[in-house]
Length: 328
Image 1 (cartoon, rainbow, N blue to C red):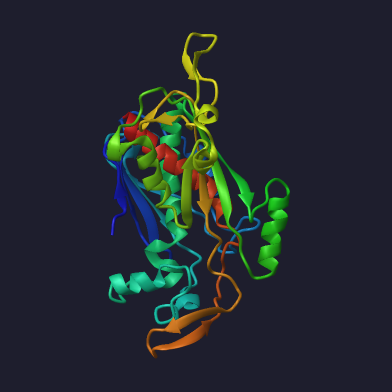
Image 2 (image 1 turned 120 degrees about the vertical axis):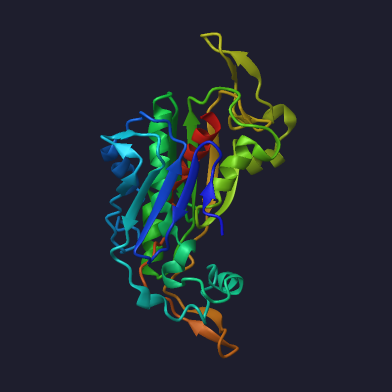
C-alpha cells in the first residue's frame, strides 16, 4: 500500500477508520513558517463529520502535534500529528469481511490482503483518512497564501441539480435511505506561469493523482474538460493578450490554466466528480464468501447521503499539497 507522496514536501498518512488514531507526517516544510492553528482547525472543521446532511458520526478531529512545531513555528523537523478516533462503532461492520458491500473495496481488499485487512469503517480505504489529508493540505494552504495563491472549491451540483435544490435533493435521498453523487469545482488563483513539469510529472497528472486518492472520486477534468471534445478549435482556442499591466494572459480559459503540464498564469480550474455514497439503507445483492452462495445485505451504520459535501476542503487540500510540492 502507498500512503506517502511528494518530492519536496513529503506526506505520509497513517491509521484506519476505527483504529485508535489517524495521523500524518509532513517532511520538507521550511523552518520558521508560522502555522495558525485556529485557522487550521477551522479549515478541518469543514470536513468533519456531524454536520447537517452528513454522517451522524461525531469526531472532534482535534489535531495533536507530536513534533516539528515550536512556539507556533516550524522548526525544520518533520511535522507530525495525530487525531484520536473517539466515536467508532465497529460492530456495524462485522459481517462485511464475508459479505462484501457493493461498490466498496471490501472484496478486492479481501483478495489482496488475504482477509487480514481491517474491515471496520472501511479500514484504510475510508474517507476518515481525509482528516489528516486536510491537516496537511491546510498547512500548505497557509504557506501558499503567503505567496498570494488562493485555492477555493465549492459544491457545484449534487444529484444532478445545483443551487438551493442541492440540499433538498440530498435530504430527499437521506429520507429514502439512498444517496446521491456530486461535483466539486475548484479554482486556484495567483499561481505564476511555469509551475509544473512535462510528461508524467505534468501539473494535471500530479493534481489528478492526489485528487483520485480521495475516496469516492470517479473523474477529474480541467478547464472545458470533456466538453472540449464537442468543440471546434476556433471556439476552444484561448487567444493570448496583454492585460492593463502588460502581463501575458488569455482572453478565455478553456485550457484551465495549464498547458503542456505547466501553469500559464491564468486561474487553474478543474472539476471533481464524486460517486454516490455506496453505503445506503436499501437492500443490496451480494455474495457470502464463506458459504459460496448469493445473499442480500442490509447495511447499518452512519453514512453520508452525499460524500461530495464534506469533500470540498479535501479537494482544496489535495491541490495545495501538489502546488507546495511543485513550488518549494
